[in-house]
Image (cartoon, rainbow, N blue to C red; front, side, top):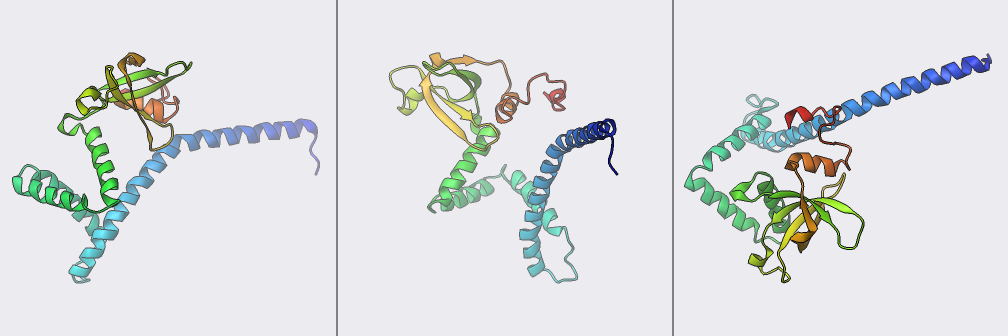
Length: 218
């Protein structure tokens, strides 16, 4: 049956409206789904590794699904509590020294360790300042994070008051570290998490955005 032009236009408009509603819902739930998927993957990895170990050590009648995840949580808690004691710190230091003797693995481990230490402000190491970097002779600015305030103490300064600035990349895990004079930096009144979200999302997550559900937590 052939529809008249008016009916066809109305049907097309309804389909576009339905498609728009669907994609609006998809964009709303996609971050939640991805977060849940990552968390579930971590849980499944813990259950797979430690659950397999328990399956070997315990009789089949004693092992229950989920015990591997429970063991992982208990072990992490015990390590956190044990870090207050000298023995655990020395043991983990021995394990770390052993890892640092293995080529390639020590590089990956060192990068992950430094990144987690940076994020957790371990030993006072952190992004000290959110800044805007004005590239010399270029009409562009970049948001970055000062990681080292004094390069002269490391012998990396080039005769000026130079700092190290980390520039994260949008929608990627990575970035660049620039060594440049402090005069090219302008401090930005923005918290670390707020600035990182702004950069990682290419500016789509903006401060005080009414549509940003995470704004209430900043």
